[in-house]
Structures are given as structure tokens and as C-alpha cells.
Length: 229
Image 1 (tube, rainbow, N blue to C red):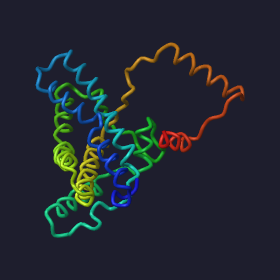
Image 2: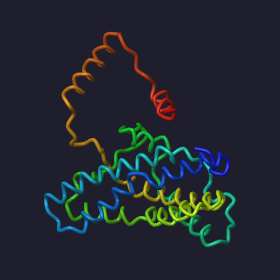
Image 3: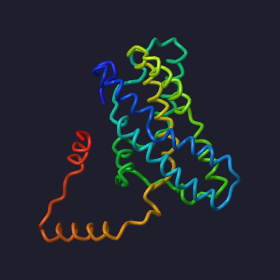
């Protein structure tokens, strides 16, 4: 992902609007409603369904942001309150992060690299009270308040340099969400049933590959194709 200021203004605005309207934000609002309801087996099931949407929204944000290589502090006046805040947050993130970028990307694709250990805490196995505590913690992270102020700037058509600064704050807030999820194991596909026709197609493709009738497509080629669609 390129520096916002190096992008075509139209391209930059399109990207920023995609980010602030990601499905994670709508899922977060629905989670808050459910968290304010009395705990029950039915409520837990609804929370799990909505958290899956929340997590998929996180993966969607990551698709755009995980390759952003700019230093979010670069170019910010160091003595401003925002620069000081972002500096503290970045230092906290870098001091507590246990995974590399490649390991985080592998996790989001549903796999773990040999160098990466599977977290001991499994979200699906958390007791009801701990599960709700985790969700409350996630829905109250700074990403969501930062998003609201970012929306205001976009709606009033703020100049690109101002949006660039807001994006840096948004990016660091995203990293805090990423860090909060890092200590937990979660598979959004866990518990979902596969349609019989999908399983039949999967078996056929595996048989074709084993018979030498098909080739595996490298993951980097898959990602390149997704980026162009």
C-alpha cells in the first residue's frame, strides 16, 4: 500500500471511504446491542455469529493495511499531542507484538507458519463471562472512535494532507486491534457446515491433482489476482 500523499487524490479518497465503511464497523454496532442483552444460550449463539462478521471485517481491513510500510510518525510535528500519542501507542505495539508480518498474514489465511506458535487462548472455548469481557474490550478499542472523527473529515471533504494525518491515527488504532487479537486463536470457519456440492468439487480437484491432471496455484499468484479484481 502506497503513502496516501503519493496516491492520486481520487484513488486515495476511494480507498479511505472503503476503509471507514468496512463491515467491521456495522458488526461492532450489532455486537454492542447483543452485549447489552441478558446472557443466555441464544444470546451466546448470536454473539458468536456476529463476532464472526466482526473478525471477517478485521481480515478485510488487514487486506488493505498489512502491507502499509510507511512510518505513521514520519513527517508529523513531534511536539503535537497527536504525535506524542501515536509514539506511545507505537512503542507499546512494537514492545508487545509477538508475530512478524508474514506470520500475521499466514494466520489470516487460516494457517500458522512453523516459526509461529498457536495461541493457547481459544476464543471458542472461553467461558461466557470471559467471552463477553473480550467482546466488550474489542468493541471499545480506539479504532471505533477514530473512525467516527475520520468520517467527519471525509464528509466535509477535508484536504488530502489532513486526511493523511487522520489515516495515520486510524492505522495505529488498527494495529492496536490487531495486537488485542494476537493472543487468541480463532478460526472464523470453525463450526460452519460445508455444502455437499462444495465437498464433492473439492474431492474432485484433489483427485485431479493427485492424478497429475491439475497444478497447484502458488498463493502469491492468488493474492495478485485478488488485488486486480
